[in-house]
Image (cartoon, rainbow, N blue to C red; front, side, top):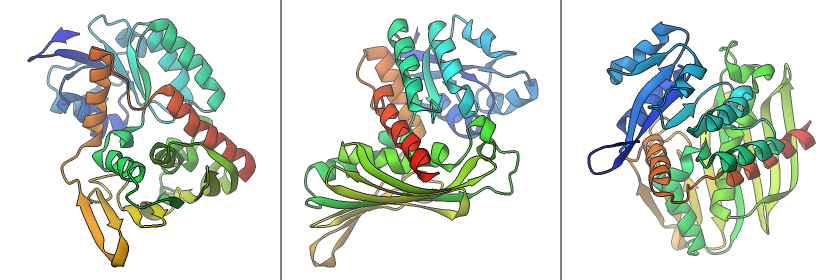
Amino acid sequence: MRKGAGMETVRWGILGAAKFAREHMGPAIHAARGAELAAVATRDVAKAGPFAAFCPGIAVHDSYDALLDDPRIDAVYIPMPNHMHVEWTVKALAAGKHVLCEKPITMQAQEFDQLIAARDASGKLAAEAYMIVHHPQWQQARQMVADGAIGRVRHVTGAFSFDNRADVGNIRNRAETGGGGLRDIGVYVFGSARYVLGTEASDISARVMLEDGYDTFADVQARFGDVTYSAYVSIRMHPYQEMCFHGEEGVIRLTAPFNAQVFGEARIEWHRGGLAVETIRFPAARHYELQVEAFCRSVREGVDYPCSLEFSRGTQEMIDRVLEVGR
């Protein structure tokens, strides 16, 4: 790390020039306080052009290994296809880099044993890029539930869908790259409930529809302690997303819970007695930048990161179970 304006700056490299890295995480790393986007690795130099457009002077390495060998890089972001996440997270940790890897960081929950062992042996931070826990709408929703704002929670519903059937080459539409809706967006409807309620799912039942070996629709029921839960995800339906926490004294509804500022304005609808509804808005929050800033603080100061590998393992265990019972 090098000294920045009043703080140590974490120097980042990106392993691959994926579209999501070009359009979202690259700009977020560049804009985040305490972070510097210093390098990208890609065999196709043309793909580095969009990064240089918003980050002039960025170094371009022609291989992932070359970037990991760069002594100037403190942390790497991994946006590769799902089936490559474990391999390159372990390699990056062994190279002495901190790692923020796209979700899902593993294909099965048992792979977390390898990641946690590699993290602990390296002494570096490794985490899944689960950005919603850094967004103030989710932090406030969690606190409201904990404070009893809707009384005893009785039921949670969730939905997340989009339709990418026309994009036949997309890695989400390929079983061999870890595609499917559950690994791509199931992490959100499952992990957000775990985050707010602070408990794990049990009594899971599901109906899963497959297409060429990957899931395109999943309808899921479960329990979180004494709270019942119902959710669905699909990559073959009209775009929609919502999470509701229904209590005995009110409802907390998040209307753009996962793609804030893209799907719509991030806001919490707090339904209370007498049919009153209070709307809490978060128009300026940028969760990708907040995620990078939280990661950098953990690297610099050693404070706990809000989304540990242990937390992410719980969500993957739920995905694994849904795939098992739903098939």
